Every structure is written in C-alpha cells, then in structure tokens.
Amino acid sequence: MGFKRWGTGFCCCRSEKCNRLPPEWVTEMSHCTEIRVKSYLYRFQLALSLWHFRWRVFSNFMIMVTFFSIVYFIYGIFEARNLEIQEVKKKRKRQSERVHRHDD
Image: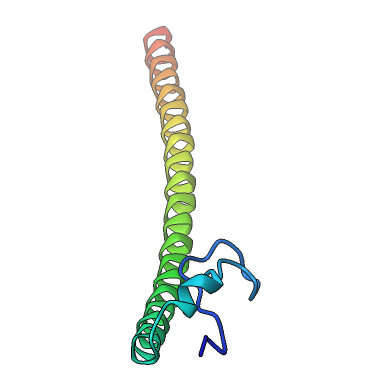
C-alpha cells in the first residue's frame, strides 16, 4: 500500500519534494480507493501542468503585447510632436514669405 510516487496537488516550486501528500492520507485509504485517487491525481497533475504551460504562453504573449503597445504609444507621441513642430515651421515660413512679398 501507499504511493510509489507522490502526487503534487499544487505547484509552489519545481522540485520533486514540494507539496507532497501527508502519509496518513495514504494509510487510511483502501486499495481500490488508492488506485482511484492515483488516477485522479495523475489527471490533475496533467491538467495542472497543461494549465501552467498555457498560462506561461499567455502571460508571455501579454507581456509582448504590453511592450509593443507602450512602444507604439511613445512613437505616436514623438510623431505628433514632430508633426506639430513642422507645422509651426511651415506657418512661420508662410508668414515670412507674406511679409517679404508685401515689402517688394
């Protein structure tokens, strides 16, 4: 009786020793219940590892989206400032041309 390999319920670290079931849980179970619990724990471990994998992929994707949106926003700010500066220069140039035309 007893688990040959302990199942992890929740992952708080990556070592094999982390979050093991207490031994009294195993000794109180009958053989059939133990097999059933083993299969449930195994399925739970698979689902949990798959969930952690998906969560890692999703969080990395969101980090990239956030980074590129910030870069795009900063680029937009600089582009708007440059456009505004160019418009002011064009306006001054037009005004100076008008003044020079009237002088001639």
